[in-house]
Length: 299
Image 1: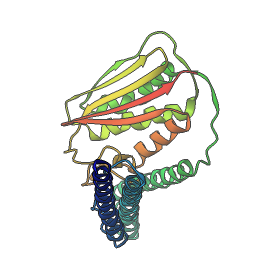
Image 2: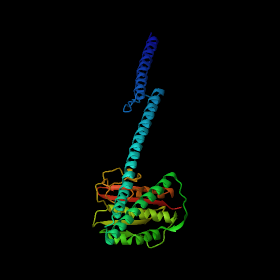
Image 3: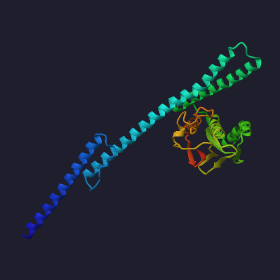
Image 4: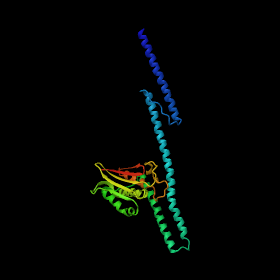
């Protein structure tokens, strides 16, 4: 009799367990149907320690992956729209000025002084247009990987000093105070010297354009055991309410007014060059402090 009661109790327990798992399986099926209908906010409960839990976990993973993919696609479409808008704006501005000044030069009553002034403006606007087109072409090559690197052992400290020297006139004309901490000894890395110079030029020019007047710009070159860090910090002259990663997108600017001259490609080109040389480039934002960190690994 006692044995019979044990058997009945065991069967009841098993039946109850099977019934609960069947209900849970039904919940998983309902959840998967809801996800299939587009409810990507639903989270299927994962409980137990059997194949049904694994199934629920897999459905959640598939849903999360698809949701992330959709978010990335929406972001990509938004950035593509912004890219077209920004390219159109940045190319149209100097082109419109050129057309207007050409029309003014057609006026026969202009004095020689006025003509010279207009020609000077035309030259400046034409150069601006050329820079935009050249940067766009270079950014396109970088993104496609169609760039040949001429890597060799170069002194990165000397390249940084050279860059600062060539930009010395622009720096002196600005109201900014540059503080550069560059080791006196040579630091050799296996890099493309010309393209690494372009990285430094772009980042220093970025600081010149977007720094609050009468503030300091700090540049550090740090020689670590396994890598070399280039760090540039400046106080921004605008509110930085953007995603640091998005500022690397082509024609993307933190300064949404787009009042400063620039292609909006400088950071994107710099990062592409760094990554082509197996380096890393990141941005950190702390209030109004804008900080760019470039890291090159030692071979």
